[in-house]
Length: 386
Image 1 (cartoon, one colour):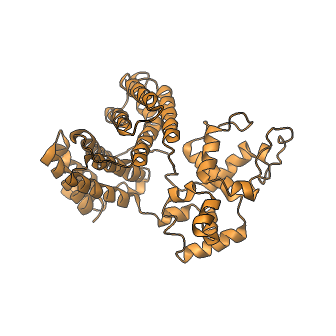
Image 2 (spheres, one colour):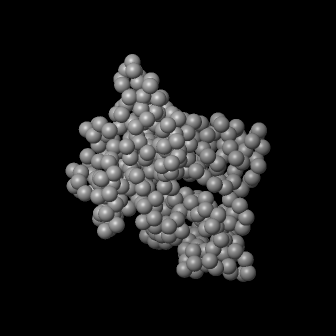
Image 3 (cartoon, one colour):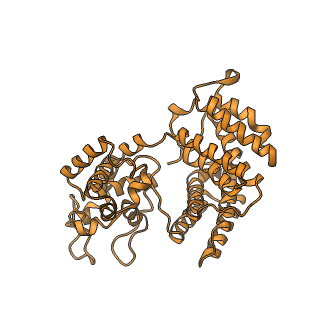
């Protein structure tokens, strides 16, 4: 879920987004290649951001926050740019047409529901077209998953997930038994998430678009937890506490994209138990992962290095990722909004923004490099407490 800016952090968010967009706009394209999946995933992140935030800032054809509206329009522009750089394939022309239509809708200040529907539809078409793996951005809440399961799933799948709910009789095909090891061990958590999101055509399994993305992940994790036993989870917990599995499950994407059968084939039964434990205790993954500020700092530093090498496409993508995959998550946590240091007697957020605005405004070449360098240095020294 995206949270909105409040108080003095808004200027730092604007500065950081400005850095991202500087990379995108001030760097001429080169032949350096960024992996296709990474580019496509960046587009997916931006479309998700648009789908959630746009309706908050444009209503009845009126812009309620000019700065936020400009972000939405810029993300739509960058989504189109990155899509144009992806390898040609069947259906790409249709994706580009829809990306252009989305940008036009935002430029015309279309209704929020219209833009959200278009952004979400395009996002899922890209995920399918480029076979992307997506993952939750925060630890799923299994209590929420249990509540949703009881309300939306138990009638068919049964209270304990054995496929024996009150409405199961006569359904064709029969509802899945989530304790069927042969079937469930072949399903990744991402696969379960996709089924909840998209449904299964030609079956009683309908999609659940009314659930938020966070709710769908919570439900997928809850269902995934039904296939493991407490004993297996305890084995996994012991191994995880000993450091086993931390190289294989560095983040949620590692956890959700492989089915237990794939983990068993690659890493053995002990890692299957670790995966079962982490599915039941997803906060353990988040606790072991880099903090959002560390992600932001690392991606900004990597963006600067890529720019110095002349790899401007990668620099652009990394800078956008610094905002979407790092700082945006800090904005969701009010406790992390204020920085440790406060130059010029105010928030570090405002100080950094003040330091770099002129460099970000239309800078090219050397000025762009200076803006990157100053951004990374100031982030370390002030905004990120280094």
